Length: 476
Image 1 (tube, rainbow, N blue to C red):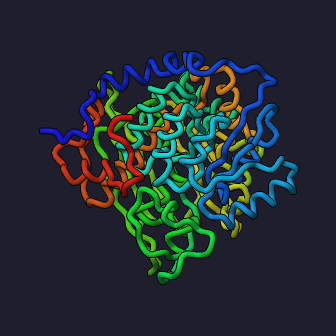
Image 2: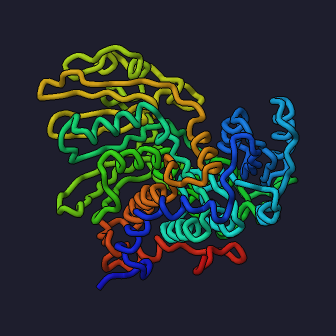
């Protein structure tokens, strides 16, 4: 007997996913195709951290007006208004409550960069209001609400881009094309690497909510608990009520690329082990995790995916995370110069401390292997001797935001580089791994029916809970 996460069969979802691009491409019936000179009014929701990258990304796209800022911290809003003025951006209108923002008929699209626990609910509300959506990764805080978000996007025929900007990288697109064309033969295994320095967050005692912070709104769907600095800005990533750990923070990018390169959908078996090592602090999520996924293709072929999070000192692999990877030098006998010498810190990969991180992917095939580093570089090694194969290094910019705006104009969702259906599948891998880790056991999953097999606790964990009135609706 299976514990159903939701009744609609996986077969129906696959059919819907296959048809999604065509279905959403008809969104012009709800909105008119826009000309190149038509102004698109964007609302950026959550402007403290990643949301400010959104602002910079949209700033120089012709015909886009960054018309609204929405944030529950009035201190952040004041600072960003000053920053916008300094950047020459026309003063945006501000909102504190996203519900009021979505009532504004002049908003054409929203760009969501809030904490994870708000992503799906805001996306669903935006779809219901007829707004196009750019939504940061991961698209959901639990499995079920991500599925509801996909339903809402399909129902209301809005354009929705997932914040998997790696899918707009020229180098990564070329790497995927190379693997599809058989460069490394039958790709049977992929690995995602998320080795990023994360220092302790320490302990923080409850304190009064800072002036100007609308903490009830910030908490939203999550349980309302006493305010502490470790439950607030950025450190919310490491608290289960609001974040998904580094699997759902940095790791979702590499999980998405691993799944894409392997050419699979949802897994049938998931095992995760790990822990929170080295530090005694308030962090609830693990800083070391190893996940094994097993997939069975429709043809009956088994494929494997491994994923690793390491939050402190570690080695580089295949030169990933070093300056030499992507500099154009040719590796010899399957080894980069970087893998033979002490690794150097990469400013583009490491956090503000400048300490080195190893962020990337490895793919193994019958004819060789391929590595991706830092979203913008790939290398390949062919044959038993590891002879140097094709490689490319390109600097990425705001291509992903440009792609979103182009699709908003054309109403052609088929041209999205990261449609929400793909974001949903990759984000589900995060939730399945975290459920396995938290429950301490392997999860058996039926990708056809999207249901956990004989595990009520896992089913409930993937379903999540909500605090009224911030509830993801059963019917979108």
